[in-house]
Amino acid sequence: MKVIPRSISTLLVAVAFLTPVPTRAQSVTDRTPNLSGGWVGTPGTVYFNFLHRFEHGAAPTRKISNFPTFLFGVAPVSGVLIGAQYATNSDVVASYPNEWELFGRWAPREMGAAQLALTGGWNHAAESVDGEASLRLRLARLSLLGVARAFSQGFGGDGRLAFGGGAALSLGNNLALAGDVTTLTDRATGEEVAWGGALQIRIPNTPHSLSLQATNTNTGTMQGSSRGGDKTRWGFEFTIPLTLSRYFGGGGSGGGGGGTTVVNNADTVVVTIRDFEFSPANITIRQGATVVWVNQGQIAHTATSASAWDTGLIQPGARASHTFTSAGQFSYLCTPHPFMTGTVTVSGGGQ
Image 1 (spheres, rainbow, N blue to C red):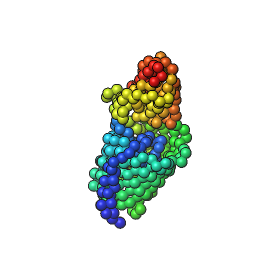
Image 2: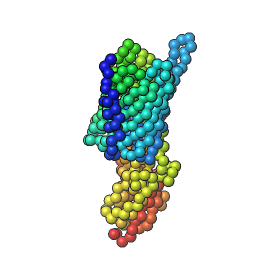
Image 3: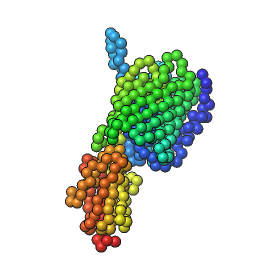
Image 4: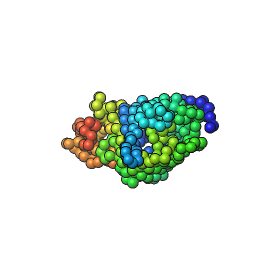
């Protein structure tokens, strides 16, 4: 087997922690069962992803075996995700069923339709420094994904390389079809091309998403998702992002300047909806000005004031507006997520 210099994988790990710039967070509808698509989190959110795959044994026992992978992650700054994956029933290393992967991922700002991401990690079971470079290309409703992976001690042996690709086709705001293939460059006997297919679901009006999938891979780590076997495993992945501002410090006034009071005398003032907060959450405008709420999040929100206006549901990527003709202070919230709050203070006299 061809040995990859440990320095190559180490370099990928180091690059993964370079200073980032903002990028877009993703749900399972933006990726495939075995490719991350360069997914990174957003500051102020803790991530828990539960990946569970099942295998049906032969007669006479017909035993159902399960292969879970748990992902824990956090975004310390925009464009960076650090975390760990823990898998049981792993077959990455023989007779070593409990597999840990510590990882960090960096994704710079999207360059038009293209998105690059670099991931570096340590696989405890294989005692391997692992690295991944991924590229995403968005074409209307279709996302094309490519990946290259390097393992200093792949599956507990020598250095290994893997390459793969996939696609996710959006069928609407909350539904997508996804598939991928990945192969090791020097597959040994019993090692198959890794593949996966899934129905990807974004659960409406929640931050959660669900993947119903079939694949021949074992775990969700870089090594575990690069090698296929001779059995099809069925399963699901459920994502649970926990927005900290919802529980600590009050929604709408969380990180990213959400709670900052901004005075703006322009005719039009934009408030961004993202990461379950209005940003800026508190604004002061002149009488006669228009506020535009732009939803840059992954699910629908509203900007609703019981005494003044209701935008209705603002879908991801959409916007809604209201013109303030009367002076006063107006509190508002998101109807599906009432912990998201904001205020609009309208000064009289048309400043």
